[in-house]
Amino acid sequence: MTSFRFFLLLAAYLVFPFRAFSSTVLIPMDETQKDHLKSYGAAYWVLSKSVSVDWLLNFRGGSFAFQHAPQLENELIVRGISYQVISDAQYNTILTQISDPEANMDVMKLEKVPKIAVYTPKSKMPWDDAVTLVLTYAEIPYDKVYDEEIIRGDLPKYDWLHLHHEDFTGQYGKFYSSYRHYPWYQEQQRESEASAKALGFNKVSDLKGAVARTIRDFCAGGGFLFAMCSATDTYDIALAAEGIDFIEAMYDGDGADPNAQSKLDFGKTFAFRDFSLVRNPLEYEYSNIDMQPQERGLTEQNDFFQLFTFSAKWDPIPTMLTQNHAKTIKGFMGQTTAFRKNLVKPEVVVMGENKEIGEIRYMHGTFARGTWTFYGGHDPEDYQHLVGEDPTDLALHPNSPGYRLILNNILFPAAKKKKQKT
Image 1 (cartoon, rainbow, N blue to C red):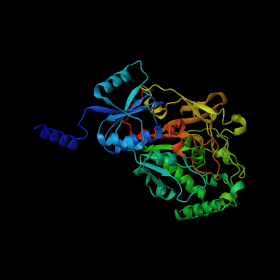
Image 2 (image 1 turned 90 degrees about the vertical axis):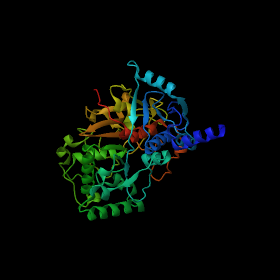
Image 3 (image 1 turned 30 degrees about the vertical axis):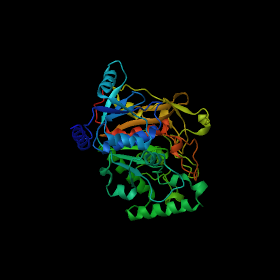
């Protein structure tokens, strides 16, 4: 009889694995977590199994919790993630603590698996991209799209779009002075010109401008946009310069409009205003948006920025985007390292800055029904990543606070939206 009862219990356990026990899995995201980056991938994977995830904002570094099931727990073990299995009574105690009006914490319910696209060229560029590196490391799936897919209207298939290290002005990264004799540069130019022609554009700059406006429409319709490094300022420059030729002949075959600066329309941009273009085609810079090394006066040893603390119950969106186990983040350089504060629009939500030198590193905004996030710098764990260097091995940086900011954005579209109260 005892054996028969055991058989029945085992059968029920196998048939109803999500209801076998009343307990909760807690993935702590404070200093006790062995691998913060893979934890985001685990949360994404749990969502893909049609199990909702609670994102516990400001509780132990922005922890995750979900209903226990053996197969879910086994996946955490395989991925090497720190976790605890707690009773529902213990979890209810945590929820009571979070719900206290005096506690700057909240629960954000994650319910949807975001469909992710990365805007990146098909050919291999001599630099890596932090977002694709961390998505791969965290085991979060994504599709690659580029100009052809965007022009033909594929973006509505996705919830979230990342802009790879890109130059939306059509100046090939302004690498002409240093790299124009390199095979990779010449191949990039040939491929870009052929693509522009095939898609019905006379110039690469015209194609990139059309791509930028299509991405703008994606945001307007409710899409989530994330960009780093030069894909931030060149994107806004492309929007402001619609219909204006400010590109010199070595990039587009004809001369530039000498009055281009005065014709810029800052009302079309997401983040920046009143900036000045860098018109010298041989200078490795697009505008004065980017803070220059000589004026920053920082080295790898003292380059840091601070994350803002937001009210979890009143400002859930920036709270989600700043979840971390650290509030001081190591700085890192890029073609666009940091944003000059006085050129950022006043309605932009600043989430990370170096206040002493007037630079913003991490910021967020809304556009119609969608949102965007801009993050300065190239690689959070490589202070000055140079062209041709090997990509960062994230297995050496599983607890990177700088990379966590990227992954906060990945999960953001999964949230069941609450109306922002401010």
